[in-house]
Image (tube, helix red, strand yellow):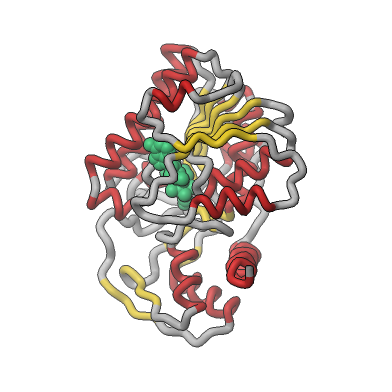
Length: 322
Ligand SMILES: NC(=O)c1ccc[n+]([C@@H]2O[C@H](COP(=O)([O-])OP(=O)(O)OC[C@H]3O[C@@H](n4cnc5c(N)ncnc54)[C@H](O)[C@@H]3O)[C@@H](O)[C@H]2O)c1
């Protein structure tokens, strides 16, 4: 477990970043967050940070830099000497990227180059890069291992594959210890409102109709956020992870129709579902082979979909009470 280190999280005010932030504080790390609190596709990140501030973590020494990664002056604001960087900042939506190709390319690709230049200049000891299962495109076999061909079908996925190529370049040419992690559909408390589970729970709670893209038979490897945090921390700790890319998933996919049934069971609300056409950029199946992460990192996902949905819904209900 990482303890007493100076850690930079880019995108630390976002969904996954805020969970990592909380976990690292528990172990008395000094955390610096760089986040521009981007509101292009969802608002409310100040609340995420506030939730961590109000949680019962006793060590709360951190620096929040509300600034853009693309802006050179951002880096001058970082106070401590950084040991580890978790690079999570990105425009993260597949569908958003189809509509905003240039913005996503600029933000995600320039973002990683700037942060890796900073890491090299400052002799940072380890960088962990958030990539995505979307780099594979529609799989030609499942479960998908890391060697599977990469045929991205959205500008977002292309930007994530580019981030990995840059990571690899800095590893080879600058000896920067860096690992890329391909996350599979992450869900949990503080989940991004544009993603299926957060969006559906919000609609179901208010007795509104769910709109399913396609026939609902598409399989998704839903992965609970605490399992992703486990993988992020393990890859920062292990020296043998540098220069490598790993799948991080729960590895037991379910289809969207099954997911919805489980969500209606958790909420105890009447089912209202309509189907519409499949969206551009969406893949038909995501299913991770996580043998490499198990073997080299000791990764072991713990939270099954029933437990994860229950925890996510409890968080939503409690939030509404506050
Ligand atoms: N959530 C998932 O299922 C999933 C799956 C695969 C990969 N990922 C990757 O994990 C990372 C985190 O995803 P998330 O779901 O927490 O998304 P998120 O949108 O909640 O978090 C990303 C954060 O980055 C910040 N940001 C974006 N561009 C920035 C910039 N130029 N400068 C400063 N801050 C910037 C945003 O304000 C946001 O707070 C992303 O890189 C995403 O591509 C997520």
